[in-house]
Image 1 (cartoon, one colour):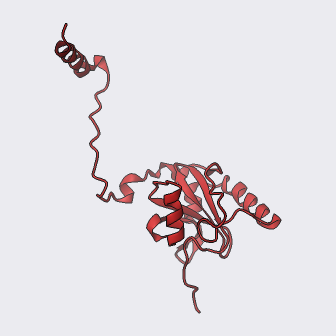
Image 2 (cartoon, rainbow, N blue to C red):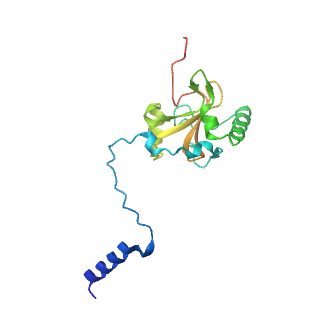
Image 3 (cartoon, rainbow, N blue to C red):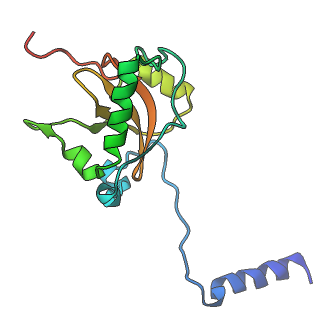
Length: 170
């Protein structure tokens, strides 16, 4: 039997799919087209407890302009307590924390970050579009990526340099 006949028979079997479910092929979109964030986010994670991993920590000191992991004993205890408390909350609880319309914990588009942070993400070959941050205290932030209910820790930012803002009332 020639290869042409073999391909036709195989195609016929695939079309019949032997009682299986037909799944239409996925059509790729152009990379330059913007897709609304709401279309790509699945809100089912919001009722799940926060989980975290430290597998993707950026260990290069100062790589993202001020981020570091040479924590003092007090900073280490504060961070571990924060992470422990985090695992007892759902994502909805975390995202709704805040006062006067300011959310304590939320995500940012990569292009909103400092140039140093954006460059470091390129070096790390991260292709995420958004980064999530938790506010630990006044200026201290914990940055990472959210994948479903999993928070992938990336940077400890004690001086608020990943996303610099002007001080209020000064």
